[in-house]
Image (tube, rainbow, N blue to C red; front, top):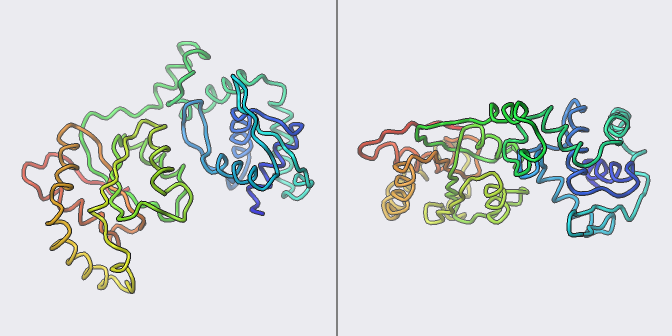
Length: 298
């Protein structure tokens, strides 16, 4: 079993085997603040700090019978159903961190727990739908100051290789991206969070529009045997002379978003922009007439 999943089960066990989903996310967040290397990343979401990976891990653990999910009118509960002593399998420093979280915050109500994370970590409350019900004006102002306000249109490219979905989404948020254009031929990934449905839901939760422009992608057969930058350059030369020309309408779709003042990110897999066709798309957009936006590689 993945070590991070043992942490989740140990957390549930430490809190008598039952937590609401909101409590679970907040306790886990506070636990990771005590780790030297954080086991989970988080994004600002509807109720504050949220880990997509932890949420998915709970679903997987439920599938294998380690816990179950119960719903009421007001809350979703995670309930431990199989305790194999996972707490004792954790590193000493992680056991201590979990115990510290329980000692420091275990007596708080769910509302007070959420309020605490909003006050101490205001960035993670910038997308909250309940902050105004919990905080005073000065606390709300602290959250407002964490928000990035951009007025100029901008074009970005971003790859998801080597990063978590949370780190990726945070990059989009902090750069004010409000439209993500996926230029993969097939928007599927074995890396959690980056298949179309999951990525689209993640974007929607932080007010980013997701658009899949599959006809700007490159079929997988052509991406085989790319062993050097020369191989990539040859592929991209063909791409510019064929796909980009044949699918100019899709290119102009991105341009129209920019013309409306949007901050648009073009995404694909590769971390290195020199090894990804999204750079060809970005360069083509920069070469269009009357370009009044800048390009940045995230």
